[in-house]
Image 1 (tube, rainbow, N blue to C red):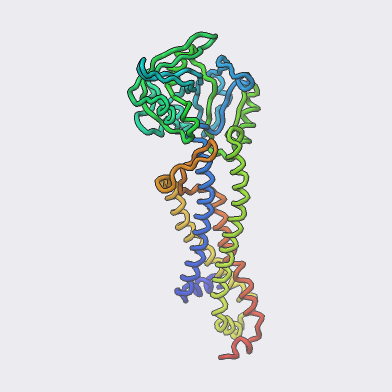
Image 2 (cartoon, rainbow, N blue to C red):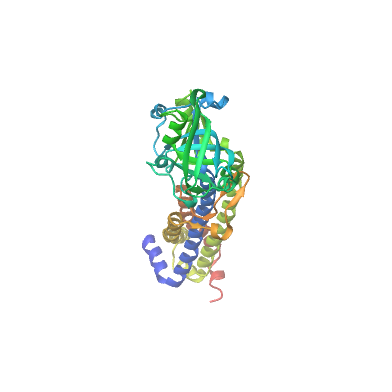
Length: 406
């Protein structure tokens, strides 16, 4: 009977029920969106810093870590022991060369780093082969093309189509020299890096340095960069003969920001949860207190106080469940939209450069189970808990006090 009465009471005054549902569901949906935006900002910070060049982790020889000799290389034989779900790897080969551009009368030469990449695999790990000012990216079957960093191209006064001469050291002390054509000019988000870095196809650099089928490092990308420390420890246990370094080690400034971000996130969550609790409590209190007369009449007709309390708690539970469902629909829709279609704020604010890091500001959400479920559970509980105090205030009054004005 109480279940039927609770549902009937909610349907009886549709205006009051609708306003209560609207207030609680809006509070729930705003909390979902706010928490997801906060997570999205953190993820955008990490992704923009690691996906442009760094990757989430890198694997190299232990000898390479202590001695930067170009002969300390790896082969693809290391990968079977390191394979994990939702993890991508991309090989890289590095070499220091003297790069020259221009005619004999106006020759310009600079020491540069040439990075050999596999365009198909690199695209799964970073966007290094995707951000261009002019020209085209490296292709899977590219041969003889070279990409220059924006600042490097300015220093060499090289444009797309210009010929570049490179000369340096190959494997076992050999001389490595080659002629390439500028295929594009890229930006990695770091001006210092763009002033000394160029990209060519991995096969071209392997042939140039006489290091066939070898790489100096493998760069990786995981599904959850926030848990990279545990992931790297697991890989290190499986391959103790290798050096595995996470983005937190390579980017200590970013790691510090992320650690402090969690403290700020706790404060933000506390503020918004408090606001939602106040909104829900105030809404439920007003909804019950304005029913003082009808609740007193039920008592006068013989309905016991404990049954009236159960009735009001059931109404609060139904309102909480309804608000959670409506809030999940509205909040979940907004979170999904801004996750699939993030708003790039770069046209308004430009790229943000901080130290050696470059960020592309964006308005994006990042859906997570705890972010989505905690507001729903909270609003359901508040529907019941926020009912208790105003209900007890009414029920403790004597009938002649509650009905005295009538």
